[in-house]
Length: 335
Image 1 (cartoon, rainbow, N blue to C red):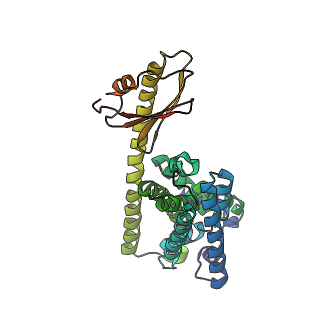
Image 2: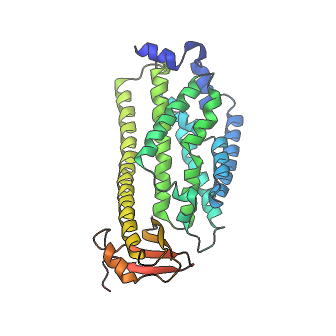
Image 3: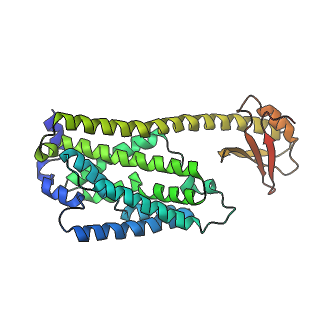
């Protein structure tokens, strides 16, 4: 049954030989100088493009950086090294490459004005709060990337895999956030990168092992297999725990936002032709956006109504269509 599934996933006629797969993923074999020159050149350019795309909040520019980024090659090289139980320096390329992208993002952050609000940028907000489903999607993408590397006839899907897995943009976002002193946001972006990295490595190990490359490389000793599995399990835990915690926090914030929206809608309803445009948590503040042609109702009434519906001491900011931004105070604070 397993052999039949393997034949469907990776037909023998389309299966890349072990030597060819090694040549494409190992930056320390073959024409090493040319490989490394291409890697660092394209990674530097992709870092610049990604950082510029993040700062301008341009999805198209960021996608361009994803397509040309070569970081997936040494990451798949890590999976290959795990299967063949041989060091090839792939981890070093990933670490140094990641530092290069982060440094580029930090340099670009100097171009932002002092009053710039990071979470108003969609490229940053979308990559600083990863959830468990991001890891699920990344695992599927990692499997697709490994199959694409192992088969000759589906190499054309690799740009799509590069877009789906998103390696360089989270590092660029981490650099921008670090440059602005937003350590927690940078940590969220780094967790997203690590989850994507782990997904690629796990996908590569599963596919390369299941399709017979491990037997070609030579069977691993039992102790070596256990050490590899223990390392991967530890990495999985280190990524799954923060992603799971962030998923729970995101669910709570969504629930609290819905509660606050209902309260705010009742509060603003006493003003004719008024409505709530949106309620969101931004930088630990609850921002309530309202449309109103007249003056706002008494704000203490809103804070009192929110008491018990959302956690106390949450700062409330009200933004109206008249261009006013009001720091309303904190829920549960003495008036």
